Amino acid sequence: MTASGSMGGVIVFSTWKGRPYVRSLVIPSNPKSGGQVGMRSMFSFLSKAWAGLSNGNKATWETRAAQLIVSEFNAFMSYNQFRWRNFTAPSKEEPAASAGTPATLGAFSLALGVRSITATQAITTASDGWGVCFFRSTGVGFTTAYDNLVAVGTISGTDPVVFVDSPLIPDQYYYNTREFTTDGQLSAETGEETETVV
Image (cartoon, rainbow, N blue to C red):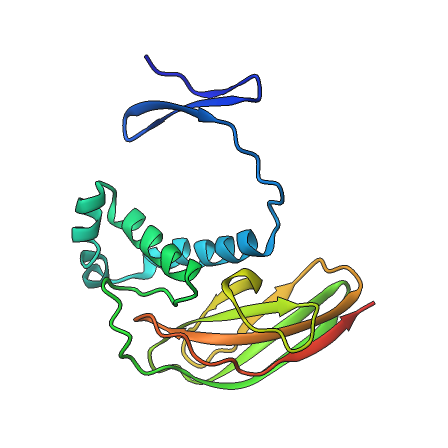
């Protein structure tokens, strides 16, 4: 017998891989915590990136997918989300080789808007660069981490990678960026920039 949905705000019925299950209803205490925003930002990037992977890239996930009894896409997502939770960059292939040439980054700049800040990371040479992580804090001299990531942009040649952070409440905001390669290397921080939303 199968069922779907919640009952009494206490338990949830559903099906996973054709098997029905029941569990207690869990409501996050703060769905916008730094950790959750950081993980969701990387999840969004990865889920969109999968479609652009080559057949060769996707084939490397077949063994892991077979072991986990999931699709190659799910193997790709779970592995890379696990890497990001440990503040290690994602990789297009499994295992991550970490031997590519990082992109050469140009200037990092901020532009103030109405309750928004536009962050722009210039790309001088793309090389094996895959994405740019945008980190934000309200404290100066912060250390970048998985839980202060606010967006991930895709490197496309030497086009600048742009992120519009909005809506923002009045405060002073500090940003930093780091680039990562297609095979799982995370670059050093580019340098902190700040703007004040009034």
